Length: 292
Image (cartoon, rainbow, N blue to C red; front, side, top):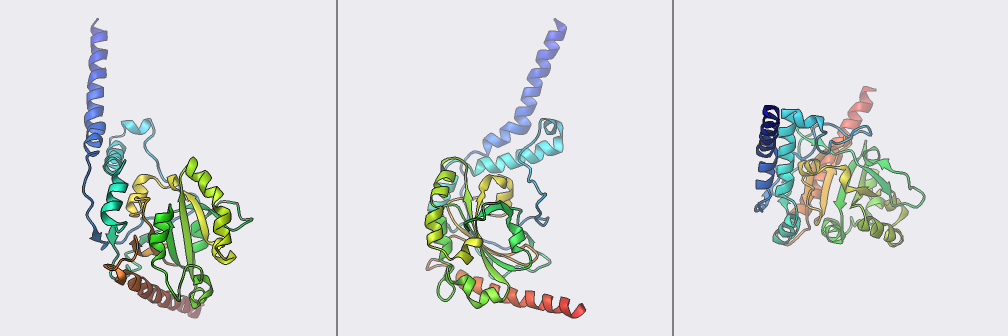
């Protein structure tokens, strides 16, 4: 009888402890919170450079549940995810028109910048069906990365490109000669959306040059856990993003949404940053050649 009582007491105490430490803060976080549109000041990215061996952690193992430090970290992650789940993306997008933050006034310094993530994707180009680490295509070049998951995000992010540097002409302009390239990544979700994406491939190819198709990738969104996407400020799937990533795979500047009458300077800032980063890269490369 005493043993049974002790077991029940232990079980009840364990459930209460688990709820208080793990579930309670997560449930409380599910309350809708207002999104504040602010200018990016601090560098965005990850502390470690990307490589093909990286696997971003998705939750805790059973053993981790007994590790207080890991449990606290996971609780924090779930709290954040719950606070931005459900209709939060839709609500925030409608409120901001996709402009979730204001881009920085200039690019981030090399010694302060953080890294682009490891992303695996498949090229749009016919015959290149094998999945590759997209960062391998980016290394050693200045990259204008366009990231989106739907037509709305695609159209918004395309507003950063106009004559003489349209999306289609970009690879044929002097930018390409300056070791600068356009990288386009479409987030794909599992299930029906994946099927729709596959059906749209032919239409996409017919509207793009082969050169552009090589650097146009489809990548599954879930390969980056929520907490990683949040660190990168790319969690809202309804809008589009622009990232300038240097030859060492560091994120040097970032924007989101479109170019409205209130934010036309963001497009000008992007191209100023591109020209400055090209000069920086040339200086580094020239210095390296002189040493050799």
